[in-house]
Picture 1 (cartoon, rainbow, N blue to C red):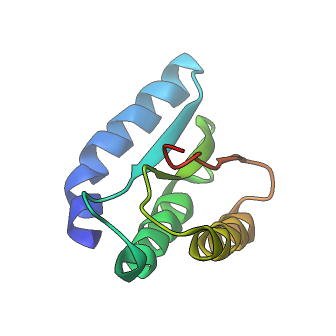
Picture 2 (cartoon, rainbow, N blue to C red):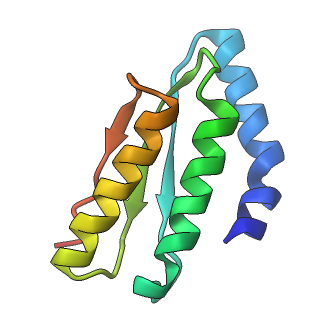
Length: 104
């Protein structure tokens, strides 16, 4: 997952640059890996941490969708969402945080 973030970094920078230039808000959706599950949670959280840490000071940064299409049971998902929320808030107290319905 970290490699995917590094590969996407130039595109993310370009999106935030354009957003800053044209005063357009940008939020990013973290997409679950195909058949991703409990073993991927630490990877998802690491990507969220890096994304928010790298971009939360940008004018165009408005928020993040914590995970789209996750394959997690209810208890694990609630725990993940709480950890993601706490992590995001440690960098950005005011950004929007989206929580996916997990295709239910």
